[in-house]
Length: 201
Image (cartoon, rainbow, N blue to C red):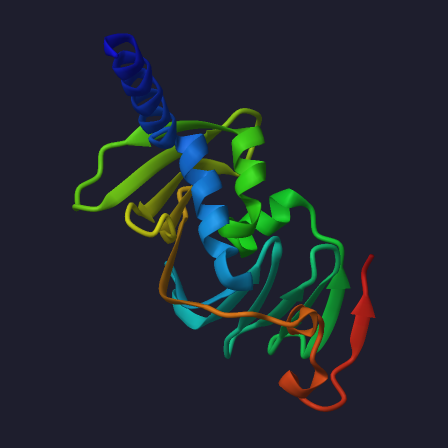
């Protein structure tokens, strides 16, 4: 009986330790997003130029972003992006590097492969913080990810760039829902009529 108890205790401690690693937290975040088929949330991006707000919809690696400043759809392979500056829809096949600045949640596997991960001390309760530094030359100097320990969902991503600029993405109001695949493909009703479509692939 004593041996069985020790074995169970060892396994339990091992699982607990594994769940506390940064890599495991990233995996838990992906799993939490995909519960119920997908998720919607509100976001804000703050830079030296100001703050932009919008809605973010995710399912696996797919996502959709809708805001006054930009509209973007990504179906896992192709990305459609509209901007009021260009007044056109650009069609691209983004790289993982490009995706990490658009949607950090969709790029967690890229983080695990291309960044050194280290758990950092949290200043607030119920928060799990990961400090990421690139393994190779990158425009990003340091990336900080802040997770809710109860839900495993990402609260904040803070990009500190080599040029000393800072980008902070905050995500709130998560809601799980089943989403059709059409959610993540270009919807022309969301952009001004007649917007030209430019294929840059």
